[in-house]
Image (tube, rainbow, N blue to C red; front, side):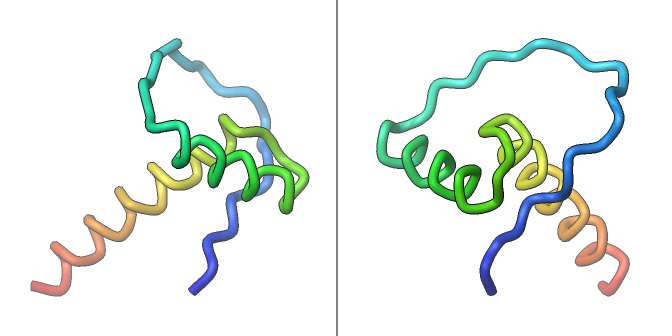
Length: 62
């Protein structure tokens, strides 16, 4: 299944965090962002949210 980031939403209260990621991983995320006409940040946040939702769903089915 191909990952599709969420559409950019209204600004919410946020905090600033830095990440160190491998160069090849950053390039893959940048490509997803470009393909979906969104930001690098939105892709990363969408991925984190999707993983957290999946984890919660998995716990509910056990």
